[in-house]
Length: 504
Image (tube, rainbow, N blue to C red):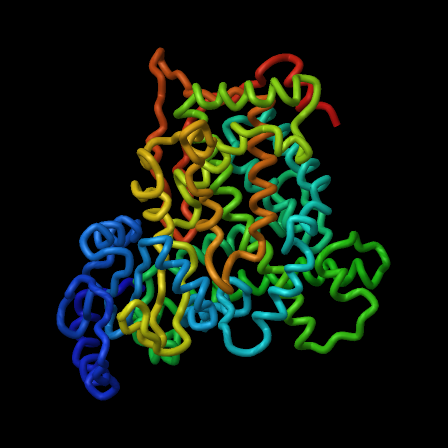
């Protein structure tokens, strides 16, 4: 239910009155930003898609911290890594909350997942602690390297069989890893029902959380109107999305619990936290949603990043050859790269980091919310403000990265008289107390997919009617962005490479 012109006209007087009643003066100014219109603020300034582009324009005009307003709701946009660190890392307790999204969180139920969990109460801390034990450190994540390498070999075989379906193969591999870690669930090779439900829920999340998509996020009282009322289609949409999300959380959890009770369960996050324990319903609820959060927090961004890698290799074949030489010199041609080789493959590492920087999967991260009024650098940051970090802009800041719009892995390799540029992982996984708990998982699974693909495949532009087809490089919008489908050629580098792909 998009916000229409007439909706704005009806809402404006009420919101103006509420603002007059509730507002109060403050000795410190708000951060600079666009002036907006009376009553509705900057609502008309926010674009329908690619918000980071507008925020980048604001950064050029107003600086590293910008204030905007939407119907009285303060929005703080951070466009500078130093500001993000000073506010979200060093004062993490003030910036650890999530905004209340009526449609996504309250009506559909995404508030139960870790990514949208509110900061108050103990559940956030308990869920993060549980996941930390599984993948929260490099050592804990390393225990699963054999799984990652095995599933990545399956990815290579899928791509060999169906190079046109590379994105679907990436998605299947990312889902298989998460479902095995979370539930000990082995996915079917084709059309797995659990993966299908989870992917559908993630697709819905992208739409539900899109700014300005639903009027109920602006006027929360609308959540109480009956579904039959004209204009209340959003209630029926919410009911449908609620069912999908519940299925995503409940179905694999029940399978894991049934196998645990029957003594046939494969070790997983769920079995670790339930085996031999008499748990309260609250603790079962926490474990169930923590497990669901593993998929919600990791699979989609992994798919985006690995598909972006294929796009980059299609567009920049000369850099692909440099990375392949790195592998050939260190690993050779008679085996696949492993995690044990990572420290000895500097150009592959640099290329991986450049993929992360060039097109970050979540260009604005996940929004934070301020738990109390505070003053930062002389500016008033009101309680309840939504705080957004413009990750895309930071990773394309010419003050940090030389020629930032150019795809150049060499920027991350130190040379005589030149230090390596800033590692993008300091930004893309979030900040403060809401930093992604699966950052080591994401780092490992994306790196091994890139390294093994480079070892055995050549990725290039496709030819049609004698003409070379260059991908547009456009992306679908969302909290997690994805390259629009593009054509490319993916072929084994040699007969020996093909034999490595097919070897079990």
